[in-house]
Figure 1: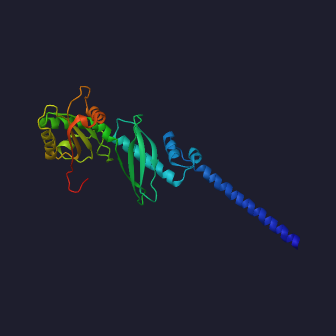
Figure 2: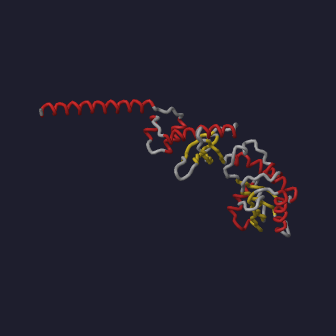
Figure 3: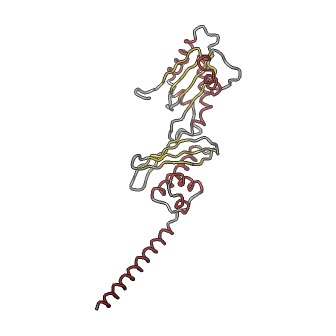
Length: 273
C-alpha cells in the first residue's frame, strides 16, 4: 500500500513538473513574440532613459517604454510640422510618472551640438492618451530677424541705439514656428517671453539718462513685451558689429564700459511675470 502511494505521489510530481515547465515554455514563447521594432534613434533614447540596456536592445519593452515611443513619434511629427526646413534628433528624456504628468525630451537640430527642450503634457482619454507639445527651438530661428526689426524701431526714436541682443528660451506651442512674423511682437503686442539687452552710444551725450528714457518710452508706447536691460556705453569698439559682440564687450570690460544702465519690464497684462 505504501509503495503504491509513493508511486502515485511520484507520478503527480512528475506530471505537475512537466505542466509547469510547459506553461513556462509557453510564456517564454509569448515573450519572445513581443519584440518591438525600433529605429536606432528610438533605441538609443530608451537606453539612455532605462536601467536594463540589454532588454531594450532585444526589443523587450515594458509598458512605459512603449508609451515613450508613442510620445517620441508624436514629438517628431510635431517638430517636422513646426520646422519643416530642419532635421532633428531626440537624444535624452525623462518620462512622465506618478510625480508629474508630462514627459521632457532634449533634442538637437541639424546635427548641431546645441541642446533644445521639449515638453509633452499628457491627457488620458478613453480613446488613448492625447499630447500637447511645446518647445524652445523657435528662439534661435527668430533671434536675428527680431533683433533687426526691433533695432529699426528703436533707432527711429533714438538714433544712438547701436545693437540688440535677445534671448527667447521659453517653450511655446506650434504657432510660434520657423515662419512666425516677429513684427507681431513689435506691432501687435504679441507676448513671447524674452530677455533683451539694448546697447546705446552715449559717448557724446551730455545727458545719458535721457537716452534710456527715449528707449523706454518707445517700448512702453508700443507695448513690446519683454524684460529689458539698457546699457549706455562710454565707447563703441570698432570690432563690435552685433548684439553678441557688445554683450561680450561689456562682459569683458565690466562697469568701465558703461555710463549708465537700467532694467525694466514691459508686461502687457497685470500680474504677469
